[in-house]
Length: 117
Image 1 (tube, one colour):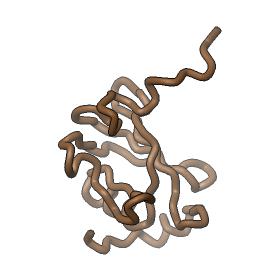
Image 2 (image 1 turned 120 degrees about the horizontal axis):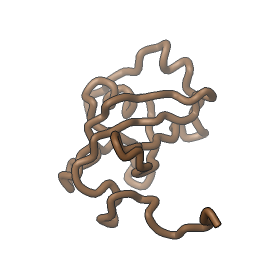
Image 3 (image 1 turned 135 degrees about the vertical axis):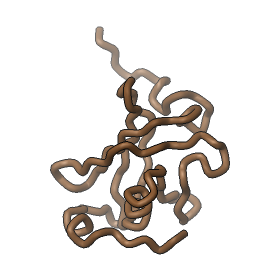
C-alpha cells in the first residue's frame, strides 16, 4: 500500500503476536454491535489512523486490505482505542453495508454458545 509509518510512541505501546500483529475489533457506532475481529500490523494501524478507513492485514493473503475495497461495505473509523495490555485495538466505526464476508450485519450473529439463561 502506501508505506505509512506508525508514530513511535504508539508503536512502543503495542504488544504484537509472533507474526507482528495485534487483534482489531470493529464496533458499530450507535448500536455498539461488535461487527468483526481482524488483524493489524503497524502499517495497517498507521493507515487506519491516517485515512479513517478500516485497514487490516490478511493473514491468508499476506497483504493489507481496506474494508470494502471490493465489496463496497466500507468502514469509516470514528475513533481508535488501545487496550490496557497493548495487544488489541478497538475501532468505533460507521459501517456501510454488512460487515461480515458472509453478508450478515455482524460476524457474531450466529452460533450462540451460551445464552443469558
